[in-house]
Image (cartoon, rainbow, N blue to C red; front, side, top):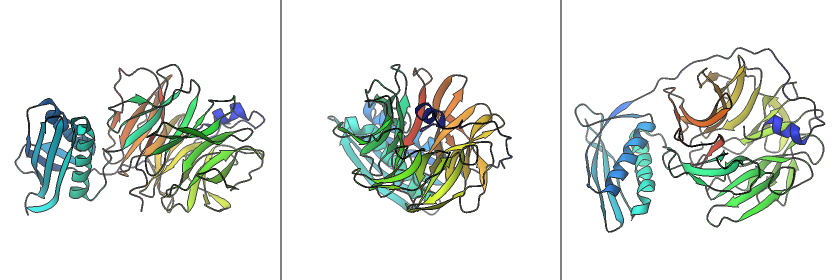
Length: 413
């Protein structure tokens, strides 16, 4: 989880137990209907070299993973893509025109050029452009994923593409790293680390330079930092004044405002609403961890009336819905709630524990942790079709936790 109550308990041992046994509540389970269209790519001419062929493979994989299309070579396709993909002299050039087949209405006309090393990134861009032009929905192919991995024996931060390719290690703290979150512009990542002390502090790393600085190292617990949509503020959890409570801090670390002062309880895992006016978070003030919403400037929190014995790890998507992990029948499952109506859906299957959900920028897919036994991996769940696939190859060693997607707020309402 992004910063679990059990982790907080290890730091703040004077607090009461966070996970007392409770009777599971009923959760309404329903499934959305997937809208799939046939897409004809036979008119997209592709050079025979490896770079052009690789571009084509990435594009097709992205379009399939989007969930909106079945790819076909012709016939009764609803949409048609024409164009070319060519690579020469260490450069790649691609053009794309997308049409509604029946009306010949052109929905997209775009060109993509760059170095051969940029082929994957350009293919991701083309895929997202096609998705948006033909469906009206944003894509997720060009997003980056940050997560925690243990393949070195330590919990470090890693980055990869939304299809799992290009995996690389970001931090080498040689310590426990937790709860990475992207800045809205995708240039920085904030996370919790035991890098310098036995207690967790909050760090900010700038991707272009690798520069890292400490944002919060108050006595006690410093955890669960999350950028506001505007990028100028962060929510975070601090125990410097007593119990772990919710605070808001400006991105420079100069000004801190306390939002909650819950006696004999703890807060965790804040996430901002798309408009930046509210924050959803977890509090165990009812006796078990549950979801609450408070205003950006504080005020009395209101509890989200959702089922499940425990409800943790909320992530407020740009689509206005909150994904979270709920303890149902002895296992954690990923659910989605409309905070305006309280309508709730279980998204994950019942075959394992599914935790720590994070919305993709397309508002359709959710990245989460699938935990079975003592093994944890990142999976992608399609909330419309209910498909569930692994982000990384099964051969990738180690356990993987705490995914977060770049570009989350660019499609906010």
